[in-house]
Length: 122
Image 1: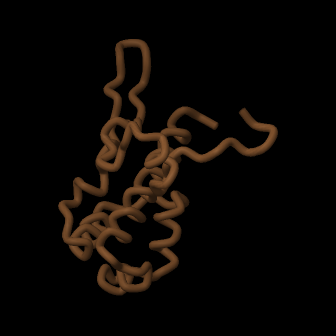
Image 2 (image 1 turned 90 degrees about the horizontal axis):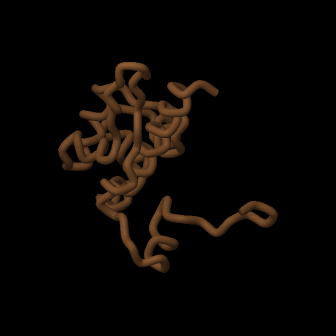
């Protein structure tokens, strides 16, 4: 997988986690959010599972229904400016997560928080 593809996949996953948390905090079901944003419920599911990146108009619709600024759905995502010998790339910063915590118990219970390793995996 190319570096660009890996960065895009990381963005999709990060956007999905943020959308899921924001939707749950606002008390919407996927169906309710989809109806308010004139989208199909399956599109909300694809976005939340990191299987699709949203278009700009979709981000604006979702943010409007969720009553948050569009930028709140993009927190922690950015573009690393290219250096003289390397291309730029997308990045996701865990440090910018508004739900980040240093408490391991709270991190385990947070959506998208650290998970126990699978058997046989470090």
